[in-house]
Structure formats: structure tokens, C-alpha cells
Length: 115
Image 1 (cartoon, helix red, strand yellow):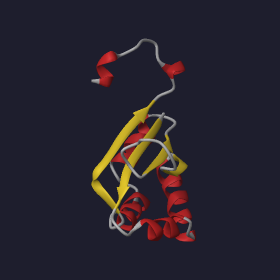
Image 2 (cartoon, helix red, strand yellow):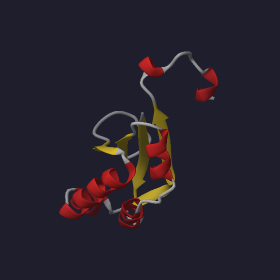
Image 3 (cartoon, helix red, strand yellow):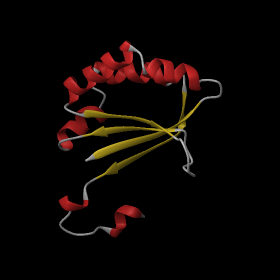
Image 4 (cartoon, one colour):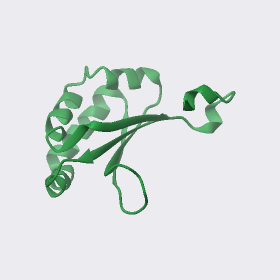
């Protein structure tokens, strides 16, 4: 399953965020999160074209709900470190989180999930 986190960047923070995201420090933090939680960092995607109401998406893949739980409960020191680094650069109030599962895993359709 995938956890997609949508954020808007704060004014004037775009270049600083991109610089940090490409840094060795960011790579270390993402690797550490993977080791601590069992999640896989898929990548961060910047809005290039289209009409999405946000600036970027951060994608994570989880093998199971246990890994997702470890990630969400922020028992990971690396998750806390990531939040400290990016929160000054993003508008967290505008952030949205989606949890996506491959259709092939579903046994039935749950229309209430989209309400």
C-alpha cells in the first residue's frame, strides 16, 4: 500500500526545500526511516503541470499495516528528524494524506471509503 502526503511549500521556501531534499542529510534520514519502520521511500514529486491543488507529494510504500503503524506513531527518531527539517518549509495545515491500495488486493469495493 502507498501513503501519499500532499503539501504546499511556504512562500519563498521552494529552492531551500529542493536543496535540502537533494542533500546527503536528507538521503540519510530517508534511509534511516526505511530501516526503522519497514517503509520504502518511493520519492518526492513536485507539481510540474496539471491542476492538483498542492505543490508536491511524498510517496511511501508499506508492506503491511504494522509498518504503516510504526511510521504513523513516529516511534522512529528519523521520522521526527524529518518533520523537524521540513515543517519550517511546508504549510502543514494544508497537507493532505491519502492511503492507496492496489485494486488487485481488494476482495470487494467499499464505496464508503470515498465519502
